Length: 327
Image (cartoon, rainbow, N blue to C red):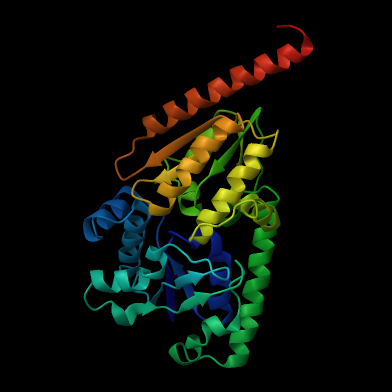
């Protein structure tokens, strides 16, 4: 049996878990192709016009998997990863949205609810639907979940050590990248790591000799410590992670500037962005928003990043020379 996994949305955070889980249960895992113009175009054409770009991209990946003759396309319903805090409504409604877009696809979708106390989604109760749906035993499912959890924790450990997710997912010998300045990159994993959608932003940074730190590289206890400073958290879990990470970046001397990469039409980010814009001035931390959509061009991204980082370099150079007594 072939289980298809779209290379979009939470693929960039949970693929090692999902791959190990299904393979441990004896199934073949098939991923969609890397995001491309054709995948984006078909997603834009078939998806609901009002939804954000990442959801349109996801739709294109689902169609790509249908062409690969998979038995099931795995589309979990992410509900909550922390008590009282929920995922974006589009994540909660994702399986229903896909079912509503295409006739006859309902029997192809493998879905279940994920309700967890943390980003570790390995709790057995979330997967009991697999017992009947996939014909696996409780014992085999528990063993597979343990293996998947161990693999995912290994992946997250390396990620928090500074290896970016694309390096970990695509290379047997992942590399770390340094630079003469450090940018804190705020953005959901699917905006940060989908090379086509963001015009290969991380590679742009590397060519400019810039080190990048992302929210997924942060220890969760650090993020939660920052969030405790707020009287009330946001409603959406990954938006909270970005919020906590952003304030950690604002306070850290080794972070020279912050870039927020967001997709046009993202509701949670429209609430997050004013916090970052206003308070980055208070912390005197250079801040810029990069907004991407299906029509964003590479030159737009490169030009803005070059201008922003050039100004940071000038500021940093002047500060260093001032300390040395040169200026």
